[in-house]
Length: 301
Image 1 (cartoon, rainbow, N blue to C red):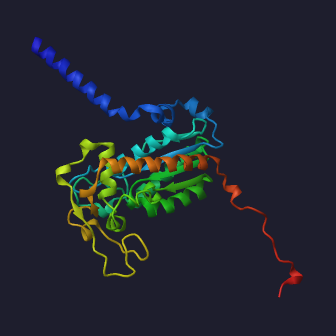
Image 2 (cartoon, rainbow, N blue to C red; image 1 turned 30 degrees about the horizontal axis):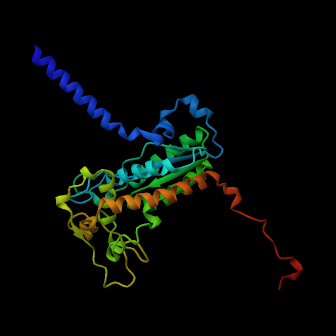
Image 3 (spheres, helix red, strand yellow; image 1 turned 60 degrees about the horizontal axis):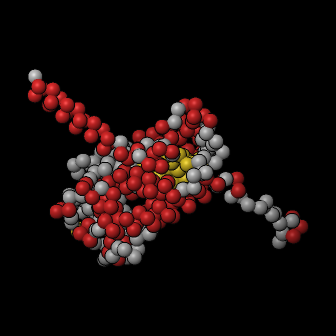
């Protein structure tokens, strides 16, 4: 009987520790002060929404080679926003939603751990979320993306949200800020699009125990014989990960370090904190500028 009680107490303590770890990400300024779902319905109703910006993180659960977790993209997004929002001025109304952890990852289907949504499903989910925010009185939405396979879809859905709801919609991928050009090799900058130095360094700085360091690998696609064709540039071609990689990565993870990851995160958060404040102040009606000037009819040739 005594042994059963002690075992039960041990199991309860272990469960409490797991719950504590699970909710560590909800600590700090970001989750304590800017996490929208922590508010009551009454509090959401009373928020000043004229300049309020709501951030919807969009990530992925997909294979990242033998060394990185399948949660890599979503993890990077959460960590980036956590650090960024710590820098934002407290008077700015910026609110964070839980991430859409699943993305359009069908280029990785068949590689274990990948969970993909179809383009139409992800499009519908983001549109439904936006329409719900609009119904609550919000005017501005940022789609914060950390998965390359979502980029083209975000271009489409952001405009659809604008047309259907009238909301001001922004979208960005922090990797497009190009803050690591002095930290990465030229071949990594050209071909390191998945699971390479950039992403591995970030995960090493965020969750080092999630990186399987004994399995770090280097594999780079070879596009050197093509003048116009590129993976993500001038003329693109449709590819699956298996078309361009045997290991599930495109990049050099062997050169990754947590120090690089911390530098990248710091640079990104510095830029993004200012950018988010600018989005709060932005009004789309200001874009038109001055009234158009029409040439007088009598002066036309």
